Length: 105
Image (tube, rainbow, N blue to C red; front, side, top):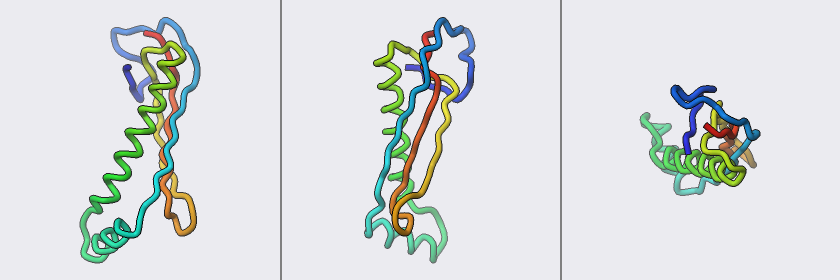
């Protein structure tokens, strides 16, 4: 499955537009990650634990979107957009959503 943020794939013209596909993942952050993140906030630097959660959530959302596209008969998703939102009480949940256009190239 070809997945791209662009609306064209060079050398692979779109033969058929199938429709919009989406993928969503809501991931929770736990207390241990919060403690490690607070140290990063205090001393500076990156929060590796939160980055792991973010990366995993993004990969899962993209995989879900690609799976839906394949079920519809697509072999590519173009114009992909990825969004991030904080949800829940005190921002304890992270939502990653992606959308794009399923096509046949």
